[in-house]
Amino acid sequence: MTFGERVVGAMQLNERAFEDVEHDPNAMGQAVGVIALAAASAGLGNVWYGGITGIVTTIIFSLVGYVVWALLIWVVGTKLLPEPQTRADFPETFRVIAFAAAPGIFGIVTIIPLLGWLLMLVIWLWTIAAMVVATKAVLDYTDLGKAILVVLIGFAVYLAVTVMMGMLFMGAAMVRGMV
Figure 1: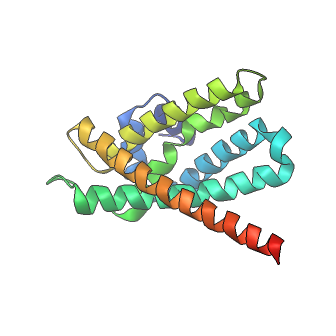
Figure 2: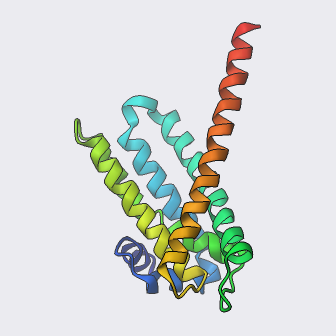
């Protein structure tokens, strides 16, 4: 499959597209590209709030976030909840999970006044659905329910870490302001 076919396949929640990425170790650059495109699009959708700095920051945080997300999916899926046929290493997990960001390429539409938040919610839910299909594919699960469980556990841990990091950064900023 070409890069474009993989991106469209990921957006269509086509498990075969995710499996194609899984089996192509040369697709790492494409995977990073999908995350960067989705993050840049989201940044452009919120350009009024962060400008160019916000776009660059969004790209960096998205790349780091997807590394963490893929790590969580990999650990939970291969160590805690594997099926007998589950065989995945971290690089292939990252590549596949990165392509689940493909719906985010439409993030620029969130710039539309009054509808932006609703469109963002739709893109977010679409991305979660892609994450479930990607997880099922990369972990070779036979049960979609197990993929949903892995994504939910990964999301809960990711959210907890994100909130704690936010609190630490906010606390550090407050301390600096007080000194």
